[in-house]
Length: 448
Ligand code: ATP
Ligand code: MG
Image (cartoon, rainbow, N blue to C red):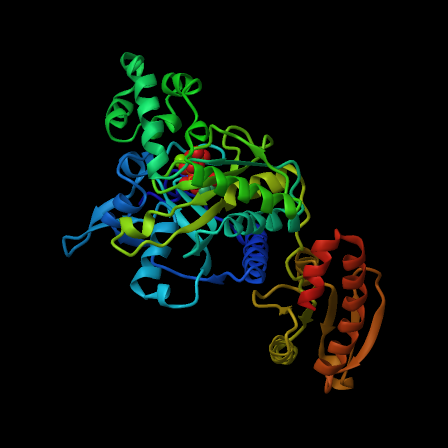
């Protein structure tokens, strides 16, 4: 029978040798978000298709071309989430969180599904860290959520990221802008792709982020929305900038940012890198004051962002960003003979129950092969356990870094080993804390 050894195009496995990086950044992000008052929310990976049609918008690329939609056995139209905001907002409305003190701030780490052309930084299954702040129109909240994304990049020591912001106004100022856009694109309608011709009628702003080279060339000279803001939206944007200035967060204004999803209003922003190729937007977000009503809820001004974990990792690798290494095997016990194997099994089990990472032979290797294996595991200490050790009740623990040996009793092995390894690892952790960047050290310090 033929082997099934290929994952689906556009998906990727993360093997144990790499997964610790994801765990580190996910934990750092949710911890930092916690300090900003964001609690983690978990919502289903699939939702009713209509949620995304209404929430993301029927004229977007995501809904028109990229969704994984299928009928379940009960005849419902189901879609694998292409993003996290619509599901989080659905949960906010469903559970009446609008009755709680506002704003309600939530964050999440999720997988997302979009049928796109796979390439570096663009997958069909990808992952996002997202943060959403429901129920506040205040520009202080816009600046605060940007500060959260900024704090995450700062903590991870990511360099050369550009924060670009823009305001795309509200439905009332957008009416004038839509007129100007229609006028502009009408003259060039012969050159537009079919999807954009449809957008010209329904939502001309979507033409601005069409990926077709012809349409994007035409869009480059189109009028920009920031010139059409109503007084309220202009004032809101000014205020967001003042709050960013007050927090010393640097930004540039990019009047061409419109974002790919229909629900955005007023502030939109992106964190962009030039170091990871064409897919340089690591994080994107903005305000979506109309989304709750779009889903049938009451008016709930809100905002959020999503940060692509694969793109962030590409950038971290490009910049050699330090990440704490996974826990090393503290002790490898190499038994020789059957009685020693039983004693080793018991001892490593006791060690693990006491929180120590320990291993022994579960393969049937010779002593020599076991020592090679312990070397591969990069074990901090090793012990050989044979008949003579069992008889004397004493073993010799060898520190592999420098060959130093210490005699420990078998009877009190766990306590004595704990003492020995703690005194050594405290030294090395202190070194790490002193040597790494200060934010990073604070985090490791917090874990101790
Ligand atoms: P792009 O313009 O690159 O298609 P987008 O506007 O569709 O991005 P959002 O919907 O705002 O992206 O998603 C937020 C973030 O999620 C992006 O900035 C990116 O980091 C990540 N992301 C989006 N689509 C993908 C994908 N197909 N593969 C990997 N990461 C993605
Ligand atoms: Mg996209």
